[in-house]
Image (cartoon, rainbow, N blue to C red; front, side):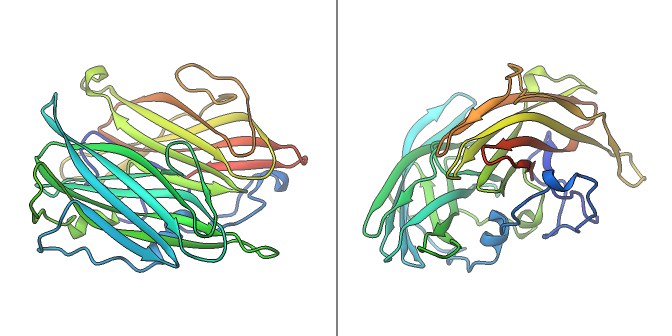
Length: 336
């Protein structure tokens, strides 16, 4: 199918993520952006860190329990899931608790997360984002940090696995980036081991409805969700959920935003065609509430939601934010 996205795109899709494929990394292109607004820093992106790391044993075809314990580069991650009950839909709901221990001799900072949830039919939901619970914690040697969250599936059994991307903070040197994987654990209504399917191989190279990108110690995560209750034939509504974390040592001001949307047209017997729509741009953060320019202090985060409507069932969404740093630089923060 070729390369269906370049630097800054996430999938818009009515169905789950089974429609498009991509390769990493994307091709480079010559930018017309003024030098002062290009990426001043070119860090290794979270997906590159994750894909370059070894993957824990998925234990496909074997019984698994509702907990896992994995250690990578002296960082130990324990995850425990517990069934919360059946919700409307109907769906089945779980809580999962995460504890991260730093067994090394230097501080580590957790920057991004990546989760993959798989139900009993093999349907995959992938989630990426900055930190967890709005934080990018620094964990000192011998220290720990924990949080809890939740997920739901349409089947009463499934599994989850993932990873966190860290920087090891070494005095006098650039941070060392690494990915700590999380072994697969069960999502089950009972306490006995179960054997849910692993994610289909074909789903692992598809463009996700979730994205995370970092520029100059600013991390932006985007998750896209289809809104069937607000959609009609030929008018498909999507909501994007954006979180930006500032893990730099100085504050920044987010001045402007822009979104680039491309519709994917599918016709029987014909190749897929892509039609770019006019760029959506404006002052500040934008979104549903048309939020103005925002001052983001060091160590803090901002989260907001917005929406797009397209005529096709699938498409791609990319964007960028213009950010002014207190040291006088202008940063182009990509959504990728």
